[in-house]
Image (cartoon, rainbow, N blue to C red):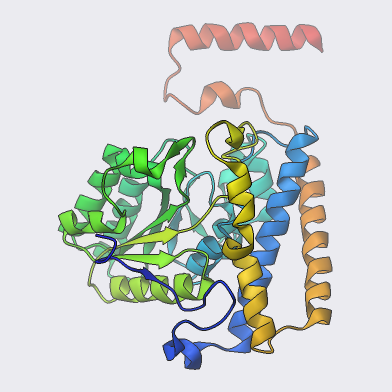
Length: 354
């Protein structure tokens, strides 16, 4: 099956073209956009980890190593498209235009962090694979409306073991919906390696059962991610139905800040392969090899990015305190009596403490 689903790559680990066919599509503007967004989300990711360690942010899901997969796919979207992320796809959300302070608020447990003005963003799915049927549903709605919007559902390799994965894929296939199922295969579903997650050699081959195209791409090659995801979106917009994409990538750090990856994998081995797998380093090599590199520009955007992140942190930390009643009031249409009693008892205890 790995022979039937070879990994598509356009720029190799050394930053050199492995497929010359895309040269005419590459512009300085596009390459600089790639680098800016990848540097931006990596800087954000590292800062968020630091905030969590300081107690200024809740448990946080890191994505370092997956920047090419998230930026390349998100830049292929149009403004009115739909994004259905997991808890690890805030890099894609930021690239798509999500509000950075609200992304931080999400990681502090605030409901306000799920709402992004002027962008069709579904709340990040913590339950595994539940967002895939939702993405199919949104795509169905757009198809019935007759517009050209598409949906993208992000998910990890562990999601392919869930019923929602199969239900979403089947529904999208039957109704020929404009949705792209974008898998980031980083080798582990929390602590379970891919070889214990499934017996099939690839995730892309699962597309066969649903009669849709399936491809594998080098998830650390932003050119492959961008070009192949854009093809899948164009196919969806033209009424040709869904596509399954497997982006083979790497999660350099822990599953979350509450995780210790040394308990289930050889972290030294991960670190030793970083020089070849790091998507940002690959892009830097490409830019220097193709004379796109501009040291002054890189310094300028680095300052700009850090200032943006610091301003977002200030806004997040100055946000009004949460209303404790929100914990009770937005789950049931009519609060069951045991929860009503708990709410009243809790509010009485808060008043006593004030």
